[in-house]
Length: 316
Image (cartoon, rainbow, N blue to C red; front, side, top):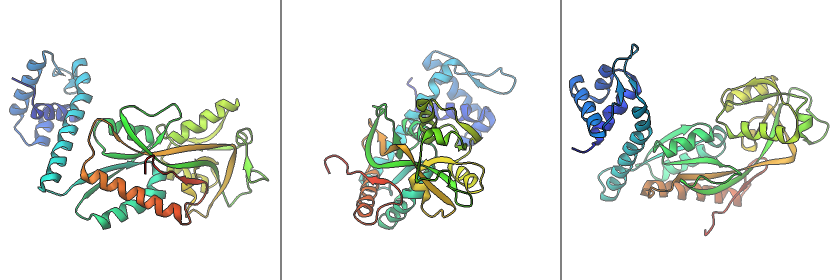
């Protein structure tokens, strides 16, 4: 007997809800059926995956914890394969699951999604908004098809295929209702260290970049608030809680924010990423083409507010 996708799906259901009864309900089978299939999976793998005697409900054993990310990836890959084949034979419309950081959702992706939907109304779109690091993990698990992520200076994850699309400056946001944080149009990290700082939660690359810049300058940051999503950070800055280092894209349409550039400058590179081991579907290729075309048109016109440069992909 071999491991089946059904067994893996039942295992994931138990892992997610920590209850055999609710797991069976979630996959639409009777509980004895789910239990038998899970037991068969354990027999096939030669290890107990779920501790059924735990007081608070079933919990994963070390073997179950090791299987969990692999099972998620296998099922995601199978779903992607079905979607790709269905597109080719015309059984159903395509699907694209796209992720982006909050600043990119506001500054780029909202318009791209509108254009893509107008061009391909038959393709189903799903959007995930998160920090760059969680988005990369979602790509690796097969939960996303494409994502606009930040390419780290330490190099690109070899598991991902990336197309750099934007180079963006990070600047200091302060409220226009208060005096400028400096008498000049720029400020140093040392000057920034004298201001109360608002930073987003962990998982945002801009947080890590900001804190690294302080460490490199030998300056200890003064925090007003740590945590929260990007929109909350911007609202706290507008309210006068503190200042924040943010991507230049977020200043568009926010008249209550003042932009002051940092010296030396901080930049980041935005790339369109997908898993390197999977062939992109027709829908994914169509989305990539729409994104690059939109950015090319924008670059030829007025471009973005602030210091944002559209990058031309190599070979195009």
